[in-house]
Length: 462
Image (cartoon, rainbow, N blue to C red):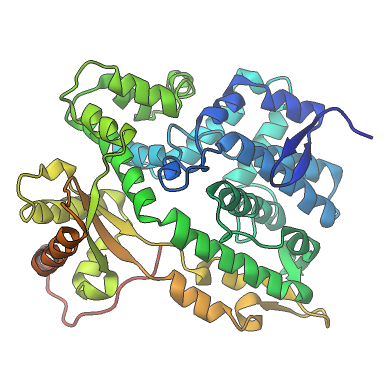
């Protein structure tokens, strides 16, 4: 019998919500997710990609419930998993992951997004009624990977987490592509619990190997065809650079306040008042039509996008340069990117250096994600997925490709002009960038107290 609390979803059919979940969904802080697109401006490539964090969060909750039921978890564990999945994106700012990049740049804190999410869940008065204090702490502990057993944490954040299980199907559906389609019913049916070194681990049965391969291939194809699509990367980069320039060059104090996370309640109140459309309206309606932010967002709104002037596979960058471009420290990484942008700008007549954007395009290796998923064989012995799958190694090799992209406000007269200019840019810019990176690497090693011999290889994906 219907509970009257279900909602029709194009991916999962009916999603059922209990009264406590409904109270969370009906809060202002959750309804705000209706106004934050899941894929930012991917709709410029895939017009149907207008779905939001709101429906994705409910989809993740639904999948979490299905997984908990399949694994026969306790009622309290199921409740907490569903609520944690429902709230896992509550800390997203305008344009989703674009906001994360800006906050890193302003604060230097790579964990700021997780801290904002935790603070909202722990302290928001709107959650006083549906959630107890202990439930809030338990949810935050799971989302921050600090509390709860390995099984609960991996269901929410791991190689087979409910986030991926929902967004691959959802993004594929709304983009109008088939790349992300996999058999979610079969995948969930083959999930099991494996006792490993005294703790519960999320695993699959031997019968699920081919479905898991399908899942990994779906993630790879969505990454290459959708998440790494040239226009998607350009629009994301323009959003971030427009906001950064609004703070650094235009001196927009309201914009800096939005991203200068300091842990205060005042910051959270202001942060929760913003969404995609409000930011665009404020930037374009601010009056400074000559400002960097206004000009960048005017370009975005009217789809006058930057062009990719250079794409370089990391194999074509000398080893010292590769190491510099793959630094762990975001601040040092940004310094190197700025030097690349400066070098490229020298070869682009009349282009403002601030409007040249260098971006590292890469993805986590499957060897660091799906490879270690435990497969429980019919004899009861667990083995890692990489040992059981005949397709895994070839998939992993493809995933690990990495690039340096450079975008700028240039134009082409026609397709022939485009080909000629891109060939010219590569001939002129790549050697200059390689020389610049080599010189910078040399100066860093000298400053560190000596010059190491030999070339070496690029560090693994972070």
